Length: 198
Image (cartoon, rainbow, N blue to C red; front, top):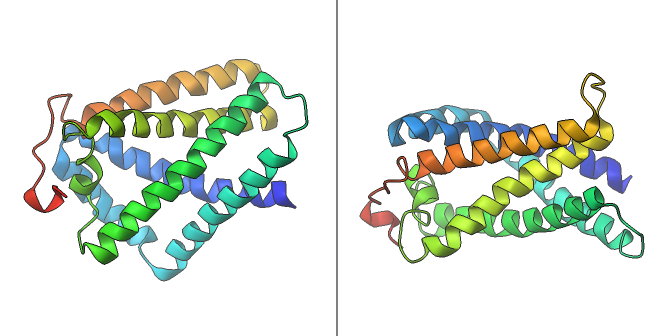
C-alpha cells in the first residue's frame, strides 16, 4: 500500500513538475515569457482543489518515501536503489524548504511568488553560492529518481532499461543547464526588483 501511494502521488507531482520545468525553460526567451506562461499555468493549479491535491501528494511522497528508505536500511541495495534513496531524501528536503519559502512569500511577505521571487537567490551574490548547487542538485535528483523508477517499470523494449536510464539522465542534465541559462539571463545575471531583495 505504501509503495502504491508513493507511486501514484509521484505521478501527480510529475505532471506538475513537468509543467513547472517547461515554464522555467521558457525563461530562455526572457522574464516576460516566463511570467506569461506561469500566469497561464496558474489557472490550472491555483485553486483549492488542485493545490490541495498537490500538497497532499507532496506530503505522501515525503512520508511514504522516508518509510520506504527506512524499510530498506537492512537490505543489500544495488547501485540504482542507493541513488534512488539518496535522490528521494534530497527531494524530500528540497520540497519542504521550497514549499515553505513559497508559503512565506505568498502569505507572510505578500509577494507574487513569480519569476523574480524564484531567481533572486540564483542571481544575488553571495547567497547564489548556496542557491546554485541547492537548486541544481534538486533538478538532477528529480531526473535521477524518475530515471530509476522508469528503469524498474519500463515497458519499452527497443532500448534496454539501463540505456533508458542514461538517456533520461543526459536529457535531465541538458534541461538543468537550459533552465540555469534562462533563469540567469543567459548566464549574464538578472537585476532583481527591490521588493524581492529580502
